[in-house]
Image 1: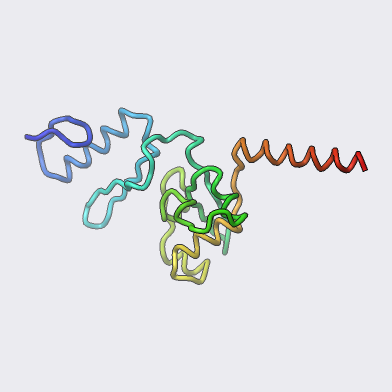
Image 2 (image 1 turned 135 degrees about the vertical axis):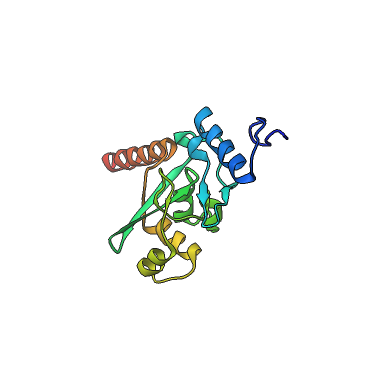
Length: 163
């Protein structure tokens, strides 16, 4: 028996059981559970999405949400990048998002089906759908963005009063 490359524990059994027990071990023993995107495919294959970070704090991600055609769509983004994308400072969508997945509920990692995405957006291209979510969706501003907006507003008020 060889030690697992993820946990260092020694497991006995098939590869699926080894992968499953390693994933559950990681989920149970760490606070990083939401940094792992675990997908069970029809074949029973378990994959961990390497695009997601392993340091999952609340400030490490920003959710951009859009309601379209009666359905909710969410993408996980790097904080501060959504506003830069909307202002044109960042042009590549993949620099903004953490992964190229579109979720029904990102907190529980419930993915939207491809059929739902195509019926709501009328496009096959996932990147253009993500771009539309980023441009039209709602998101929570970072503390730095809120501070900058407050300073700009204060300067506008001061300039208006001085006139």
